[in-house]
Structures are given as structure tokens and as C-alpha cells.
Length: 317
Image 1 (spheres, rainbow, N blue to C red):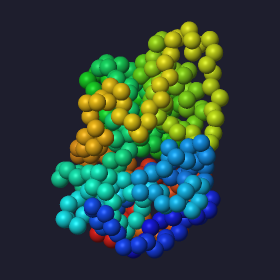
Image 2: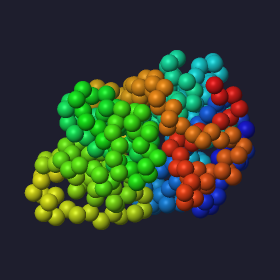
Image 3: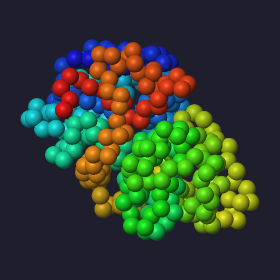
Image 4: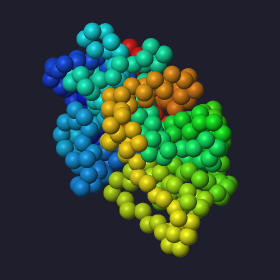
């Protein structure tokens, strides 16, 4: 039994772990890598002010290093039930039952690793309160941005455009029901904007293309960076609203109506769509993860930019 540990900037290794104990004992099938968050952890860029807030369920160690981190594992518990778990990348582990969610039969193992990202996108939409017929722009075609576009495109009359600096993301965005535009081609007058690029340039683009009284939902986490923004006359004259969204709390619109567990169950049910398989890959055997992690988190220039790499533990279906 072993687990992935980040031990120095850009360095990870597999370390042995104790026999699992807990209400649920889970044997991992596969796990998903959340590239944005796990890149910050891998490079030791979690700000000291955020160490407590960023601490993951079942994390061991402390930021910056050494730390065992992750939160998207699919496995089978001791009763044979398929479960999605908020747990770091580890072959076998025990944890409280509250950190496990049953996976619907319609969702295959590999796609279920997107559950945490889908939960984030779902909470984002609860914060955004989209309206049928609105013009919506998603800036940043990462996993969360694309899942948000996928959900927005299901709303009647919604015109959804995804923009990204990587033209290779066009095919995925269009497969999920959205339009795609390069940043310089994005039209003005966007009424609902989701910023998920984690870049200053992306947020500036959202502010620039926003319509009068538009709302901009900030879904990015910048780590230790402090973006500079143009919040001068145009921001005020157009009465723009800039709203942060974060998955740690249920969005106010549904708070008191849905628990965290109910939100996760809904997120898992929304993964019953084979088009979402386009977000997954490459598939990496667990034993190879330390050697390959750097390349999937920070691909060299010109190399494909993966969306959600999937770690396999030997018996994925």
C-alpha cells in the first residue's frame, strides 16, 4: 500500500502507508488530477494565509512540504460498492463514510473522477443564477470552465461561448454544446461571464466584454499571485458585478435546501453523459505517477495540454 507525496518543489514520490482503518475501507480503481490546484501544491505555491483553507480531506503533512494531497478517488469499499471519495492519491485507504458518495450505475469509473469538478461547476451555476436566453461567456477551457459551459448549454435559449488561448479546446467545447472563439474574437455584450482561466489576462477580457449590469463569476484561484484589474470608469459606468464562487460552502441560493452530500449526489448524476469522456486523459498507472506528474501538470511548450489526467490502479473499468 502506498500514497503519492509531494516532497519538494516539482518533486513527488510514492511512500508506504499504514494498514487502512475507518468506517469505509476503499480499494482505489482510479483517481483524477485537478491540474490547477495540484500544480500549486506540487510547486509549493499555496500561500501561508491559505494553508488552513486549502487543507484537503484526509490530507497528511503540511504545506508546503512534505504533503499528501488530492481529492478525487474512485474505488470499491469493503462491501463492494463503488464510491467517489475525497481522498489523496492512494492505492488503499480507510476514511469516514461521510467522505464517500455512491456512484450511479450510469456513470463509469473513469468518468466519476470528475465528481469534485462537477460539484464546483454546479455550485458555480447556483451562484451565477443564469437566465434562459442570456448571452454567456466562459473564459478558460479547463475542466471547471468546460463543465460550467456544459451545464449552461442545457438551459433553454442560452448562447454559450467558450474562449481559450489554446485552439485545441475548440473541439471539446463544441462537443459539449457551446461555441468556441479565440480571445480576440469574443463579441461584446456578454451578460453572464464565468472566469476560469486563473490568469489576469482572462479576467481583464471578461471585464472588457461584459454588457451593462453584467455579472462576472470568478471561479479561478490565483494562489500566491495578485492580479491587477481595470476597475475604473468603465467598470462603474456599466455597473458590473464581480462575484467570487468557491465550492467549500453551498451557494447561498441553495444553502439550507441542499447539504454538501446532496450537492455531491447531484453532481455525480450529472456525469451520466458520454460526451464528458473528452475531458479525460492521459491515463497513468499509479506506479508511474511520480515520474510523469511534472509533465502532465506543466507540459513543455508545444505539447498537448491535458484536461483531467486519470491515475489507474490496476482494475479500472
